[in-house]
Amino acid sequence: MKLAAEILSVIQGDPRADRAVPPSGFTAQLTLFTGGAMAFLAVFALALALATARLADRWSGELAQTSTVRISAPDAQMEVQTKAALRVLTSTPGVKTARALDPAEQRALLAPWFGPELPVETLPIPQLIEVFETGAGYDAEGLRLRLKAEAPGAVLDDHTRWRRPLVAAAGRLNLMALAAMALIAATMVAMITLAANSALSANAQVIRVLRLVGARDSYIARAFVRRFTLRALGGAAVGTALAMIAVSLLPDAEVAGGFLTGLGFSGAGWLAPLVVPVLAAFIAFWSTRLAAMKALKGIT
Amino acid sequence: MIELHDVSYRYGAEDLLSNITLKLAAGSFHFLTGPSGAGKTTLLKLCYMELMATSGQVTIFGRPADRIGRDGVAQVRRRVGVVHQDCAFLDHLPLLENVALPLTVSGQSTEANMQELRDLLAWVGLSGRTGALPPQLSGGERQRAALARAVVMSPDVILADEPTGNLDWEMSLRLLTLLIELNRMGKTILIATHDLNLIRQTKAQIAARVLRIKDRRLQLAGADL
Ligand SMILES: Nc1ncnc2c1ncn2[C@@H]1O[C@H](COP(=O)(O)OP(=O)(O)O)[C@@H](O)[C@H]1O
Ligand SMILES: [Mg+2]
Image 1 (tube, chains in turn cyan, blue):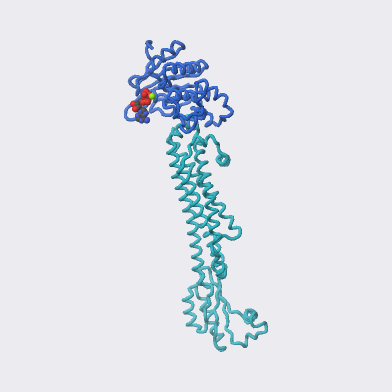
Image 2 (image 1 turned 90 degrees about the vertical axis):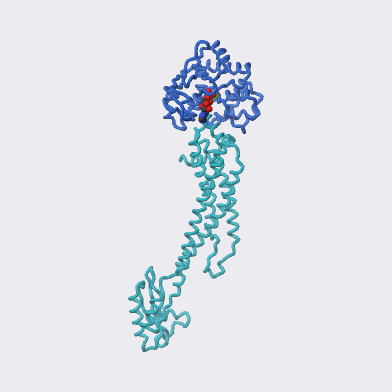
């Protein structure tokens, strides 16, 4: 409540308090520039974070935890090899269940291509075994070797497994994007604190006079906080706008069949960068406030 | 109003002021004399809390100084008008805004008090200089402006640090008249000065006590003053 009132008074401002602290050119420009540059970078980091999250999500969704074993063998051996393969599979760590498809299911799978009347039993089509993995998955190479020994006609088809490292990479990239945003915020804290301290020490004499005539710390701090907050907000608004334009001009990567996802924002994601200037203002508010309160402690 | 009890103050290794006991009663008029470097300014700073006593007790408006927080100090300074030796103006603001500064920082509007401000500036003879920046003023003008700023909040106590240091005799008398006028209105006044003529002139008009800092201690000056 008190903070809300304070934020409001920062925005409204007191023109006389503003005049009491003389304008300081270089810290003003530094804050404006910092706000702009950091916001620009933050928007890209945000785009990367959202895109990698989207990517990891999509890929892991496609990573059904299933694979198939296909057994092609002469009729006489089919049953033996199927049983042997099932034995190998059920004793493999990482395999949850393994189940041979019955003729009706195989027919349903082939129906789109050959029609529903296909006499599956009389055709030399392979027997399929459906394998469900546990979350951790199995060791595909080891399984292949064991299948080769026990059921030479068995072929392990783990079509989606190769995407696993990609999902991990997308997750890692997402973490890095989040870390980049945290670093950008921390850098902004450092820069604004530096600029605020410089303005505060340049105005030490002004602050002393204000204290001598009966100004409270909060009154003096507000004059500085207001400036830095508004400058950071202004700079960040420009930086954000430029970055959003830049992101919207990025080439569309959807052409790769939706496999690679574009770095851009999508749909409501375009609203996400709008928090960047607000965050920048928030950071400037607190950094300056803390710097001012600390500097004021040294002035009676 | 302001009391010092057995107060000492040191900047470095040695006491500048030792065992000072002083009581500024409401409505009293005091002079503080002593050679340059004796510690007059330091003693005044103890009275409005720019400095805190190294030992002993300073009491301001009935409250021990060491128990007045930072906002409390601001509050005290609104009730104690000070004419600083260096005037302590904001050089980038015109005179009128400098004089109005205590109003501004306490959240009062300059516009609402404009007539009062103009009267005040006329009272110290600066009506024509309201738009000038402090560095453009003469020493005497600055000191009169400093007095105007010291009284703009109608303080109970006025502390003036060599307020006539830059004034010729005629101007000194005018400023003294202003201070005596304030005292007659009930204000408590303490003036640091080594202008003995000024002290004699005052004693001819009102009952003023003269204190002197000598060898780090405060003593009542003799009847020769
Ligand atoms: N901030 C300070 N640090 C160290 N010494 C100081 C400081 N301020 C004043 N002094 C010393 O204290 C002594 C008294 O100063 P001051 O109170 O200004 O005397 P006065 O006003 O009587 O001329 C001087 O010798 C001065 O050099
Ligand atoms: Mg002095």
